[in-house]
Length: 225
Image (tube, rainbow, N blue to C red; front, side, top):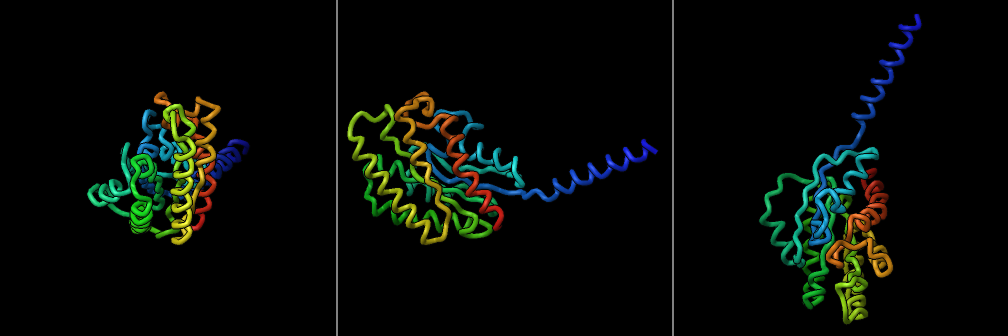
């Protein structure tokens, strides 16, 4: 009798486990960006989109695929061209966008950023299965606090703030979630462990802090997908 009861309990346990596995939301994720998204100077598993996927897998979601279209040095126009020429099949449940630092660094017209950023948002929406509901924007980090910068700290900080203001306003226009990680990037002024070996790009530790900020926003998005 005891053996029979044990087998019944065991069967229920496995059934519940299978049910939970079936209920897990399976997702495809596309990350669009530049060096911050590709994870310059960090291992592939330390990139923030990969860390985010891993964190989401611990929740009621399972990111089966993470595709990244990003490269160090890309501006908004480079990313626009790459999206058109990169062969990525199908649509995605989640699409993220983090771009603009190289527009600022290279002194491009901010009007160009505004126009091309809007173009990137519309492309991201098209790539998303649920349109704007599946897209989120991440703010541009403030690299003025890094050892890489030796002059014009205030100018850089003000310009990045201006770029982020445009990105936030444009995201609001399209009803897209906007995640502000810029204050986290500014912690690198006092904590150099948040920077990679080049003294400019984020370390895995900083990316992990970004993910803690991004994850709750994405979880709420997933509930509505």
